[in-house]
Image 1: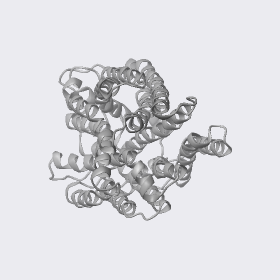
Image 2: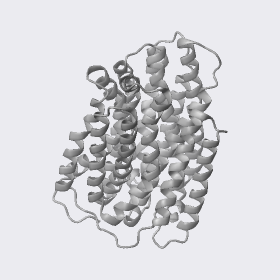
Image 3: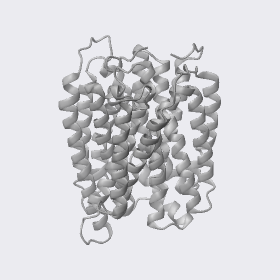
Image 4: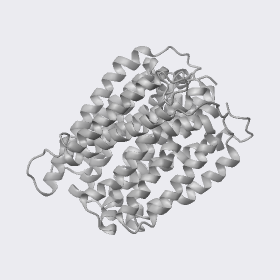
Length: 475
């Protein structure tokens, strides 16, 4: 537990959520800015893909390492370090004169994100308990859902009105302000003595990195490419070594006991599948809006507002709903709504209008996201004792990041096989196939929730919100 802090819970939560929101924003702000970046730095298609891939690769590879480091050095201290790295890298991206400079800076930014993401969730576990923790987790889930779609609006607006560089430079003052606020407001968590699991850290980092690299390369070179196969094989081998080592290590970086809970294991699988579907939604719907409907970057970003508004409204109602409805049931309803919206959206065709083909199904997707993220997050840290809070949040974020990398790789590969079409017809067919793939991923998600998570839900009284019941970590 942290040392006693006189700060208000609102101030503590605001610092945690703003820090987390900043890295979520950069996960999606890049999508509407990519055409401007390509023109501004004169990048080819392969080089342009690494602007996003360098960030994803490092972020996914270092998550478990970043999560474990918080247990050893203190989570407030680590949050400050992560914010400093993220802010400095954002500055370097904002002034990037060449493509290689930007790609290298994006990789460094991934290091900062891999620290901030698991540390922010672990800080909630450390600073809040009982119903306060349930509300904090609900806000955290809302932030996760809204950050992605709002990033498209912010990225599009800045690319249209100022420059794509502004979307990254804005992080610098935010990171600086959060560093000052964190040092003044957040209480430091207890530093746990012990040896650092060097073998586990290397296997986790290189294994995750190689796996993400192989998935990313599959989109460009195909699943049979020697580069893709090598990356996937090396990743799998290193992760097998990791599991064997962790089963014997006295102080593992990834405690295997976290997987003994059917609820937590189901939550990790759910998050991977769900995020695989959702990254396809953002990536391909943005292309449809700009390349088929002729939207500008700003208009494309604003095109996601129907989902964002509904998502926020539903997410804010989660604490009240959770007082009466089990979290697993809310999750089941959320995934079902997302599946219905994605299936509708995947039916778009040439000549369809934004309202009928995009805006209306987005409302269902917004409802689904709003219902899904908080109970999905709570299930992923259910029953975790304080000493494993960092590792559990790292695993949850690893599932999130790897789900996006795997999902995007698969959907890009599938959507490439749409035949010889030109113009808007080609874009529409490309996007429709990809979103059909997202629909299938959501159907798989629904099966996991229905047959793994719903059967393990525990009864709760109306006075005890289900998010509290699902979390139940040691205070």
